[in-house]
Image 1 (cartoon, rainbow, N blue to C red):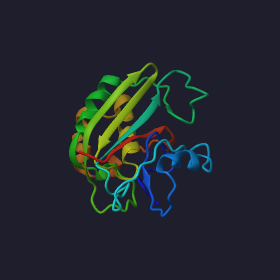
Image 2 (image 1 turned 180 degrees about the vertical axis):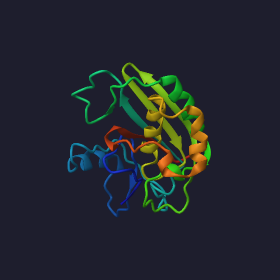
Image 3 (image 1 turned 90 degrees about the vertical axis):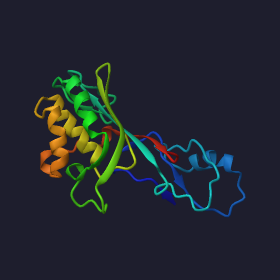
Image 4 (image 1 turned 120 degrees about the horizontal axis):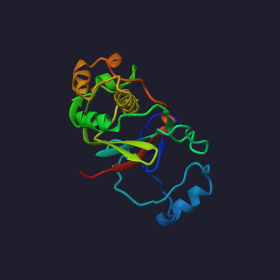
Length: 201
């Protein structure tokens, strides 16, 4: 079984896995058959035949992650394990300005967890956005790959910007420093979602 990876505890709206089989089972029936055996927390939505050398992890060209922050006064009991609650008012304009500094190719060493196995910490972020939906602030990043905890550390840094502890203009210097202690804290995984995986540029 080959599949894309993400941090433990992170949700996936869209995830891709592939496997080889000698079965003559009709490919369209795999979702129904597999869903009957899987936990209810995992649902197969689609199955298709691919080339034999296809690899769900290594052939991925783009990934989009979303981090959800509940920025209301009291939070939510229903979604408490699905979003990160911050009662303190966040400066949305500052966060929207700061997030744009992450776009482009950078060495994201300051935004990776210690012990990361990746040989290179250079990644490209194609699109970076901070949006507001009622009481929720949505951080969304699309890139060619992400280091371990990278999205959660970027989100934590943007929260520091929102709390006006870091100025938006400081983000380039934090990136250039390559020092983990200059960036914000690592936010918890339960508010992070893998939204989309793409295999074409």
